[in-house]
Image (cartoon, rainbow, N blue to C red; front, side):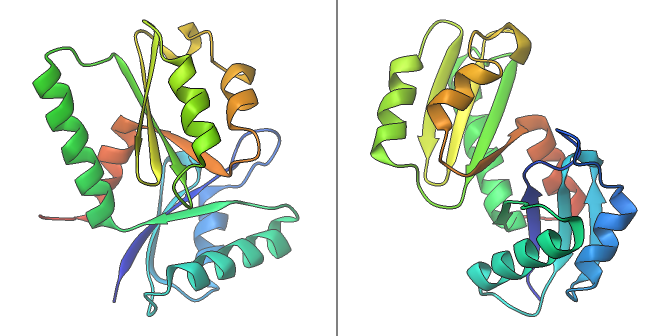
Amino acid sequence: MPQYIALLRGINVGGHRVKMDRLRTLFEELPFEDVSTFIASGNVIFSADSDDVDSLIDAIEGHLERELGYEVATFLRTPTQLAELSAVMEETEDASGASSPSHYVMFLKTPPPESLCLALADLNSETDAFEISNREIHWRIQGKLSESPLFGSGIDRVTRGVPMTVRNMNTVRRLVVKTGFQP
């Protein structure tokens, strides 16, 4: 049975509070198996009988909207996909000799539109660097997230209209470990 990680947007931010036991129950109602949550930012690990990712996303988004009363954009990845993402980025960081103190990943449902790629390229600076990798955008910040001039509304203006959710790379790596994935 395939295992997935659901990365949910807008959980426990902006007044949308959901306890992790409630979120786990909502996923078990779909019905998924081996459901567990990881930290309170909307990360759910589960197994499903289906390998149709689009249908799984539709089912999750529809169920969460009905039960919570608001849209919850859902981004699915497999443990293998997250492990590969993490490994490639570790190699890049090691090879460069200068890894950023902060590394965030923006997860998208599809590769970003060219307009977003160009806008992000224009934002590369000594503080912020962006790298596109299929359905992910890596955002490396020299310093803390809050020290970036793009923190908050700056990045929102550029990415507006492109559904995505953001996770710290440390969270991504810890999710891979939690799945029990072994390459």
